[in-house]
Length: 47
Image (cartoon, rainbow, N blue to C red):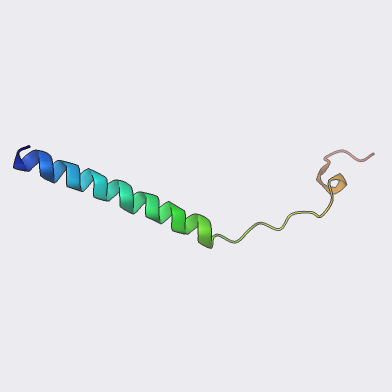
């Protein structure tokens, strides 16, 4: 493996790890949305 291939491989793997870590942390730190407690409150039309 030559030097340019090694630099390309290390840079691509680093970018993938950084992007994956960013979204993983974003998922863990995002606050959940407030949702209704019952299924009937989710209905669009009244019964």
